[in-house]
Length: 89
Image (tube, rainbow, N blue to C red; front, side, top):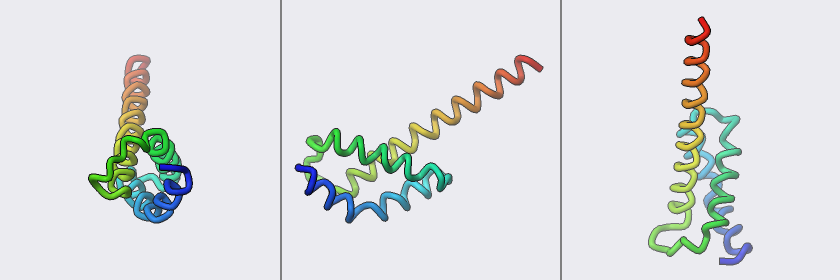
């Protein structure tokens, strides 16, 4: 898949992708960061797209995993802060 084809497919999918991420993470300000990460990973792994599902489905699955990773990182950071505050209280 070349850059032109990838971009055309992304354009068709972008509204659905943004809505999915926004609903999943609940933080509209972080939506674009997650979408950008998903697009980057999608481009880097475009050769793994086999066409067994719709391109948008494939890209949305990448975005969901990126959102989950971000939420996990935030939770670990919150846990660390809470532990540190408790430890020093």
